[in-house]
Image (cartoon, rainbow, N blue to C red; front, side):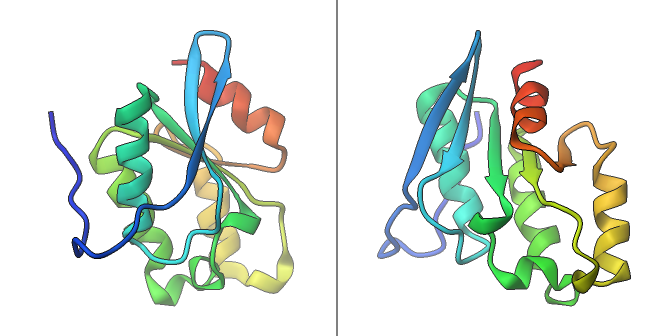
Length: 130
C-alpha cells in the first residue's frame, strides 16, 4: 500500500476530523488548507482512520485554489486521486471566480473520484456511497 510522504520532516501535520455516515467514513479539514502538500496530510488521515474520501468546503481552500493559473487546484486534487481517495468539494457558484474556474467546476460536477457540490449534504451523500 502506498504511503504519502511529507515535503519536509519539519512540517507539522494538518488537523483533520472524521465523519461517519452509516458505514461510510470520510475526513474533513479542521483547519484551512494552505499548501498543496496538505493533500498528503489528508491522505494520511484517511489511511489512519480507514476513510476513503475527503470533504472540503470553499472556506477550507486558499484563494490560489480558485486561480487555475496557479495550478494549486490541479496539483492538490491529483495528489488525493493518486492514492485512490475520493474528494468532494462544496463550492457554491461565484461568477467572480471567472469562466475558466466555472468550466472546471462544471466538469467536476460529474467526476467519479472528484466532484463539486453546492450543498454539504449532497457531498456527504456522494461520499457515503462507496
